[in-house]
Length: 175
Image (cartoon, rainbow, N blue to C red):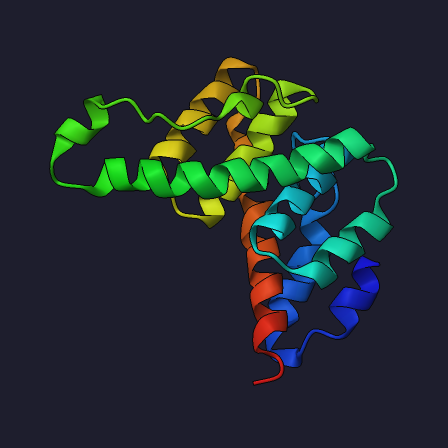
């Protein structure tokens, strides 16, 4: 449960504890549904590979279907590949790489097994964690085309930021 996860966080992570409580609510993540909030948080937790946070999120939110849990994993995994590749394409000084075909299989993006907007939200969150500007732009633009507001997009990235910080705080607690 999230409360149990927060209770073991050290005092130096007090702001993160408070932010974690806030961003997991519709009031704290405007323009997103409660289900989207937990789905985004779960994908972000998979991306940062924090089992305790994953378990806490899964225990907290029972509305996520098996397909949605699989899709959260899929978003984390496919973005782990795409974010490295497209970050390279974006950052390399030789822009000829951008014209070359990626030749990477990524069919899950076209058929994620859940609502495509929700998958895009998860992909945006993971891309923000992985710092791929090219992917961030692509997912944010796609979400705006599908009717997600800038506030909803910001909420998505705020969830990713707090999940990343919560996992980081737990990982350094024993140091």
